[in-house]
Length: 254
Image 1 (tube, one colour):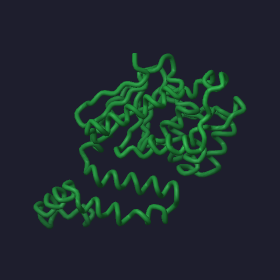
Image 2 (cartoon, rainbow, N blue to C red):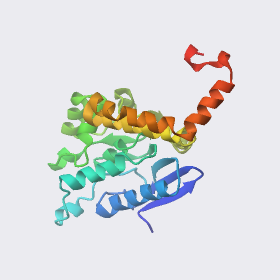
Image 3 (tube, rainbow, N blue to C red):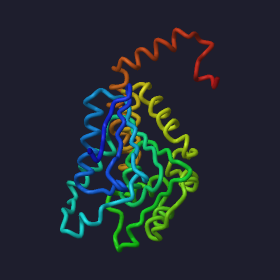
């Protein structure tokens, strides 16, 4: 049985974490995730849904992989891993149920959108083991909610309910657990039906700004603009807008 599975559902690539019992992270698990993302891109998918088939979304790292002398990523390995997860050229929606702890929370943070069941829990628990978050969780919570919240989450190593994280701006939406599959698939289908080149440009600029500030995104703005103007999506969208007549102009606030 694969520890991460991939299936294509229309234009959506569904990547399912399926490593019993709690999707604990090790090198093989990360490699399988990256392979599934690559399969989605190669297969012509226009969006990715990341979900779990286990009781929890992901309960963190497999500690045994470290205590046995497992490989520790150097800086180059880390940057390549995060880049591959965070900058896959498709919109990625995470559907989180159960626990997303430690590395599991950090995997969700690499996604573009996080939708959580109201019964889910999130946390960076590493400090309780004398560790710190290994996959960039601290800095990504800083980017979303500021340093005070990032320090609170990482230093106290407590679990947090999704309503608080939605209020802090760390996750996008909280829904009843029974509605999570439908809500998350609805979001990713909407993104998959959108203008692929424009959405890819938006994702690129947002991620650059998060990493390097406004100037980092501005340095690629014209490149993204040119890709958008050359796209078939733009031509079809603009033609449809012009054909609809001046009374429907979206710029009038209607």
